[in-house]
Amino acid sequence: MQLLVVRHAPAEDAEDDASRRLTDVGRKKMKESAKGLRTLVPKVDLLATSPLVRATETAAILGDVLEAPEPLVVPQLSPGARPDAVAGWLGGQRLGETAAIVGHEPALSLLVSWLVAGVERPLIELKKGGACLLELGSRVAAGQALLLWLLTGGQLRNLRD
Image 1 (cartoon, rainbow, N blue to C red):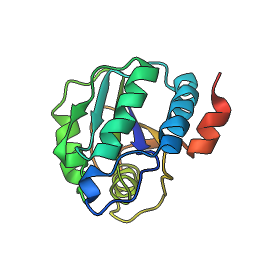
Image 2: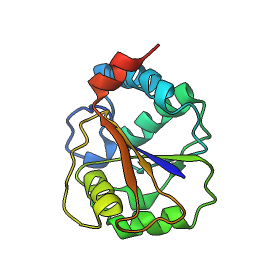
Image 3: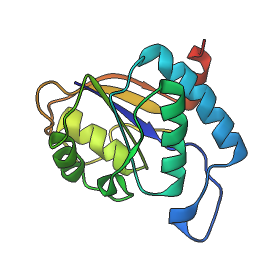
Image 4: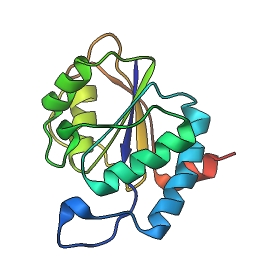
């Protein structure tokens, strides 16, 4: 199984972190980035998102462009989430060929580092609107994944058809 890990697009500043919405530029960039993602990941069987507004808006854009199922809101993808909590949630899902998750830094970098290298420190950095693809194999566990690619939002936009 493959796991597409996506950081939310650029969002506005607000006092209440949970209610920060995507900026107009962030929405536009994410739509173009999603078109680039479609060239690399033609099908998504499961789409999950953090409950924060900027992530749910990013997931909605991805869902539309990638023709993915309705996004599931998953508390384990909230900022500060621990990699083992996300892995536990993923392990309990009926997953198809490709699952996609939308969340926040530094939690996503920690998750990817934990899945690939088995360490809980950020070995990569996902830029806003950026993504990476992991091959998880038969189990979701520390040090068991393979990083297939890591791209910024700008690089993804350069891939769009």
